[in-house]
Image (cartoon, rainbow, N blue to C red; front, top):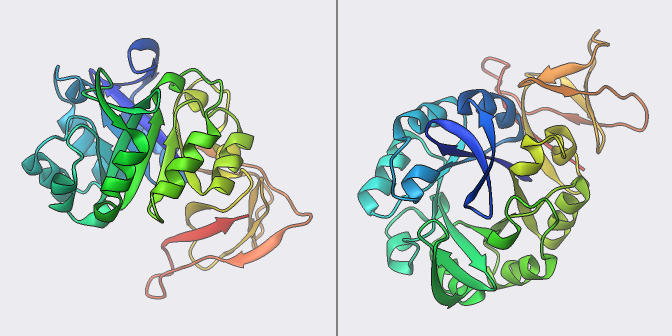
Length: 289
């Protein structure tokens, strides 16, 4: 699975290199959410809050009402955490405050521990403060009380030069079955597929914003990924790279959330879409393999 990310500074989607060097303005976060949410959950990070220099809470509350969002950035007390859960955040990404006691006071399945790493050790406070705690020690300590991990290789973040797959694999093993999302340096569909084989999801930002990797290619990378479609009782023809509505008269490429989906007719596998029998219209979870 992929998780597109929206990092916010001053009400704008931005991309930074290594968490400090401004690289690009990604535009209106609401427009980005409309584009990205076709892939499922979107990671939304308030960088102003993470860096202790402001808040984009009003904007992010609007985002979580529009689509499923994982929310992070500056969540360092239980009152703030519970407020975001009440606002509709699917999950919380907790970094600086991530201790067994703090995470254990929240619903486990809705907590993602953000383990941000430099040279194999955890960094906090917007990646500015070194803790001296080894990454794997932190993962093992938090695994019993969290529903997921976000493992970010800070030195790779925004570089678009790949990631350390051995480090990701070690985190996956130490997580003892808790799902891991990797971030930092992920640039190609092949790398997304490699993470899937390792047993990790991919959180992607810079590569999508710059056009180096399309959202469609990322979703369709080898392995099993999920895409939410409001297709009712229609059936879907799918292959690894593409989707097409089946059993209809449509012969034009369709767009889902503004993302073009290319039509194919050869070597396609047919799967039924999930639907709500009461009204025949629901977001169906479909596996692409």
